[in-house]
Each structure stands twice: as C-alpha cells, then as structure tokens.
Image (cartoon, rainbow, N blue to C red; front, side, top):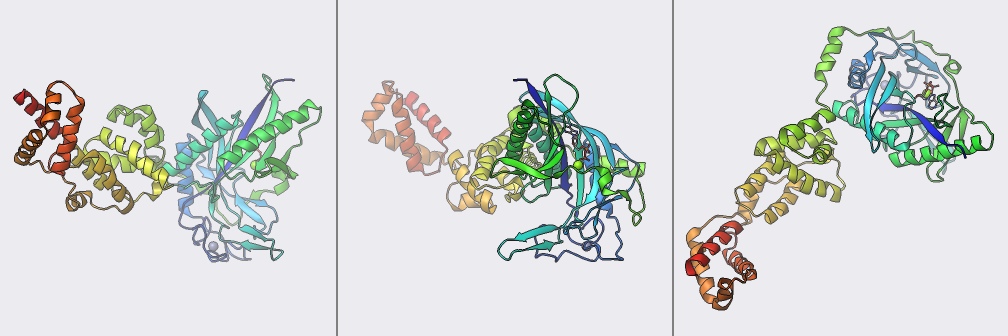
Length: 479
Ligand code: ADP
Ligand code: MG
Ligand code: ZN
C-alpha cells in the first residue's frame, strides 16, 4: 500500500463575549427563555436597520493582532445569501472581500516540537438562531436568542497533518482568546466551533487532494476521532481507485462515522454582495495602537517569566498559566506572601487537587489569594502544622474563611511555651526510663516514640521542630 499523509485546515468560529449583539442592543447571554433576547433587527423584520457594535471590532482587532495578523485599515461587510429558518433575514452579514485581519500565524507545540500554523484570515460575522427539533411533538421550533451574536471566523491555512496538531492549534486559540478576554471558547456551549477540512495525498507529493469539510464537532475527542475516521475513509477511496468528492460531511460521534450533508458550496453560490445598510469601517492607527497596548501578557510570556523570575520548573509554569484566572490567583498569592515558590507548591498541590476533586474550572474559584497567603505565612512561622494547614485550606477553598481567626478558634495555633515544654519533657523522660535508656544506647526508633508522646501531651503548644530540638538537647545533657 502507498503511504499517505493528511492535509488539514480549520475554520474556527468564536463567539465574542460582548454584552450586546453585533448589530442591535439585545443581550448575548447564553441560555434564557427562547426568543427573549430578540428585537426587530435580530429577527430580520423588514425595515429594521443594523448598527455596528464598536466593541466587536475592538475584540476582532485584539484577536487578530495577538495572532500576528495584518489589520485591514479599511474593511466592510458583505451579505451571504441563503435561506434557512434559523436565518430570518435570508442572508448572513459577514465579510468576504475585505476581512478585518489577514496573514497571521500562531505557534503550536506537539510531541514533534514547535511549528507555526498560518492564519489565512479572521473576519467578523453574525451567528444564526437555533432550531430545536422536537421529535415528540413532530415539529421544529426556532429560538432567535443566538441570532446576531457576534462571531469571528478564524480560517487557517492547510498547515496541519494530524489530530495532535489540530488539538494543539485549537487549545492555543482557546487559551489566547480567554487571556484576551474576547471569548470563553466553550465547545460544549458552542462558543467555539471548529469545521475540519481534510484531504489526503501520497506522502512526499506537493499537490493537494480533494478535501471534505466536517461539521458538528463539539469536543476535542470528537475532533480527534473524526480526523482519524475521515483520513481512513479517503485513503480507502483512493486505494480502490475511487475519487474523493468535495462535500460537507456531518460527523456522528456515537456511530464514529461521517455521512454526506451536502455537496460543497462555493462562494459564488451565495451571491455575496456588499451590505448596503452598513458603511465601511476605517480603522485608525491610533485605534490599532490602543488595542495593541491593551493586549495583556499572554501565556507564553507568562510561562517564561515564571521560570526566570520565580525559578519555577517549566512543567509548573505551564500548568499555572493554563488559564488566565488561575495565573492571576497564583500571582496575587505569591505577591502577598512574598514567596512565589511556596505559593506555587500550594497551587500545584492543594489547589489543583481540590479543583480536580470538585470538578471546578479556574473561573469558578472563590477563595481570596490573601487568605491562602496568610495560611502559607503561618506555616512558615511554624504557627500551624503543615497537616492542619491543609485541612484549614479546604475550608478556605470552599468558603473563603479567614484562616488566621479559624486556626485560633479551633485551638490549632502553635504557641511556643518553653517552660511547659521543659516540664512535660522531664516528666515523660522520668516516666519512661526503659525506652529512654534504649535511646541513650543508640536505638534511634525510640526518638520518634518520644516526639509523638510529647506532641500529644503538648497539644499544639510547641511545634514538632522545637520538640525535636529540646529532646536532642536533653539526651546530650543526660548522657
Ligand atoms: P471555503 O471558503 O469554500 O470553505 P477556503 O478556501 O476558504 O474554502 O478554505 C477553507 C479551509 O479549508 C481553510 O482552512 C483551508 O486551509 C482548508 N483547505 C483548503 N484546501 C484544502 C485541502 N485541499 N485540504 C485540506 N484543507 C484545505
Ligand atoms: Mg468555509
Ligand atoms: Zn436584537
């Protein structure tokens, strides 16, 4: 059998996190009773006129600049004409001729190393409504809440070869959009959607084969399975002397196979033309500069800074910067307690452990970094044992209690009381002459026996370290 390689390009739709829709003042909030976030504009009523939301342009610029694109200083909107019940105007307002951003790239990292994926363009457009097929009632209903929610479509060049690269690329985009604050990119809620274009060719050849486009991919796992399935299907066709048809296919993740949805349409099928209701947009240099200045430190720079400035291992720096929310909590904790390494240890250990246990996303964390910092400082000052501190942190994590007050109340605070320590130490040694002579004879195990006994009697009135120190001194004195 010949050797084949896959060629993959992605079209990714990202819903922008603006408060209102792209051409009207309706809320973009996800959910809500059907058709409650609607008005004449986003339900396509005759005579209604669109007004562009400036924030959408700003968000698109942010995304484009962060992905190294060139900004089109002059751009405009076009109508893409098609009939579908979730599209009440019978056209979608999009950008064909002059998209806002072009010719960018992002860098991805896979087990094979680093690689650039070129971005052909990013354009702004409006989302469609949602059809709900009610099998029970045998009818279809339409909800226009999503109609007019702003999207950017990010079109890559066909630079990817396998599922690992595709997922690295999507994760890269998702992380970037979240850091920029332009989208939450939730695949399950549809705020990030990917269409996969895939063709195969004989390994080593340059000409690209005929591609298919796969839709309906709503998880990274489904995407990986769909790529594998489609690659095999196309190779099988070529191996048996048949042709790949250019078409749009729908992936059925339950059946783990795809089926034809429609033959592939071309731009000309949509009879695109410039939208006469919307004036072209002029983007000033000053605006571009403002947007550049507003771009926060992104993950890669953060990761590097954590390694250089805080001396963290690359692995830890990677995990701590996976989401902007988590990195901010970490940095604030490090700042307040003045010890980044210790703060990182707590995050890598307890914070991540509890997040996993309770299936929480970083955005859902509710503890204040100041409270964790207080706890870290108390452990450092030996005012609470490490074991108790972990227990207290569970309460901080869940209810954001004040750990200092709580430790006092619960009698967990270690208050060094030297005279009490000496009294108890002498009494215990006198009461246990047998074990003590074994200890003097060099039986080291007995040391732990005495420390345990002392800790129990002292009930937090001395730290384990002080107890060990005092016991060691007493041994020297009595031997
Ligand atoms: P359309 O607008 O008709 O969907 P485009 O030419 O804009 O088509 O390409 C859409 C996506 O398909 C892009 O991400 C591009 O990289 C990818 N693509 C184009 N040709 C191929 C091919 N032969 N194999 C794999 N992907 C391809
Ligand atoms: Mg397309
Ligand atoms: Zn509206």
